[in-house]
Image (tube, rainbow, N blue to C red; front, side, top):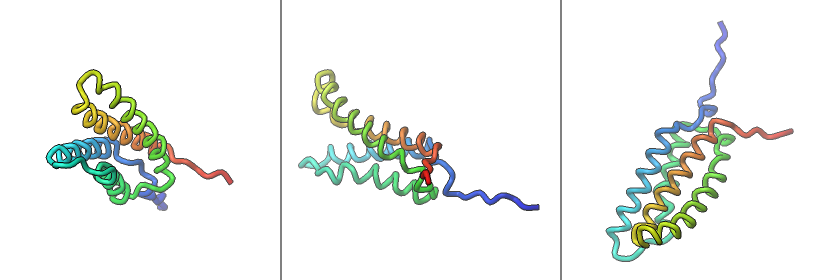
Length: 125
């Protein structure tokens, strides 16, 4: 009776948890920034969602070969943020464009990251 050992690091990132918690974290960051007198720096805006994704990777032991989706997720998220913020500024005003684009960008990042984790990258020898 030899059972194959399943490496827990080879499991993909949990889609629902990663996306929902990343979006909730982005919303929380926007709520906190709205309460501050001065606009926060870039480090603060990136802290919550990035810390959450790192936490999910560590807790669920997602293998490093499944992290490749962070790169296209970041590129698509940044593109959505900058293009979306500009487009939304004309529709809903600048005060709402930033938070909506920020949360949407992190949601897109989380979706791309979680979906990409289902397809591990292998190194060619």
